[in-house]
Image (cartoon, rainbow, N blue to C red; front, side, top):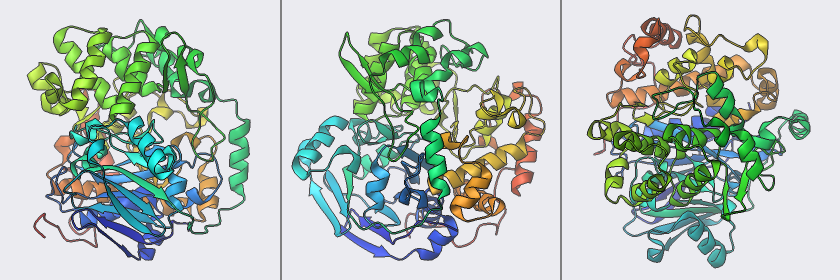
Length: 563
């Protein structure tokens, strides 16, 4: 089986030292990326750790596909204990960082401890340097990137940064890369911010050699020749369609379609797009560099989830206003989904839907924890009662679009996801709109027969996040092609995925999570929901209470923060 190569680099911020250790067996077993990060995190982060404490660890990793020139491979994975969900969580980001990370020669990087002053960590194939940067306290993403380029000659594609939101431990702070790409969900920016790390850079010329089969060029050529609408509009092409089929959260989840959808549609985004945008080595080029000529505003996006959170869910029907929200979140370093939903909850509490000035003002306050922003920076689950609104989260994570009240299988997938309300964990919505061929499509309504497919999709996405492969490759990298590219049997790959999902679940079980956390606000309206949960657990071989059976996870004893 193809897998990532290289030692684990462990960076101890408390001691200002770095060490390496061989992890060949781990890489051979778990491919790379998310699977390797999850195994390391499960075994090394104490089960009772504080997500914002020194005992939490952050893992960065890529996979074998980052040694190819195949489209859909400009991504990498990050894993840690989430400040938002209080569970083990992986997030991945596109852009250009993954190739520079791979060039350092490390199979994975581990960030441990806590610095006593604000630092940038420079990682090269020759070692690690710590640079104190007290003058960058409070700096936004662009300012950090400019500083690193001016002082060190490294462009933004070498850099992962933390904005003010991360420094201020906003629970949904992102780790930003290439200026406008994000390890978005779960607050991993706050993990680094709590460790007093402002940025990490990667540079080198020591990448391992991993031979990917020639099929990679077929995938690349097909991606280049495709006339897919995402090449013009990215995921924003979904907006009007989702509204039409009643799957677009609107006015803080009180409605399922938006009368102003046309004003924030893919067509409006395409009108603002002024050049092509892509990730490393990808010919699909679905990114969205956008510009509003009248105001001079430039950003990348907004993608569909941002359009939902800061558009329909906030009662905003002008794409330029959503672009501004997107820009603010990128500069301040926040997940646009959680930030937008949290702002929408505040708008609902104040009866201020559509108040764009208040929205942008509130985004700034959240990042700096000023006034009401200090409350909202905790996320919806921790402030909904104070606001007097409903708790639209799963396991503490705010909802994306693709509403499960219409797409019922996606509703189940939101509930079972170890990551919380995240649409990419199982990516089940693609089967129910559908965005796949007719022979793969499923009826939107009902849950009968869907749990095994949720399990398969979750397992498959572990492998994509470990290889590492963009989810939008689904039309190009079929199961048989994945077998060829990774030189592995599809069912064996799914078994690796299943083990990683169980590792995540086992870690979260040790922190008190169980069946009670596998729910959605509308579970009572999903006929057969409890029976579907039972079927899901049975398919995974878990207990009826949503816990992993004793002895099913090997290789690690329950750690504590005092160990």
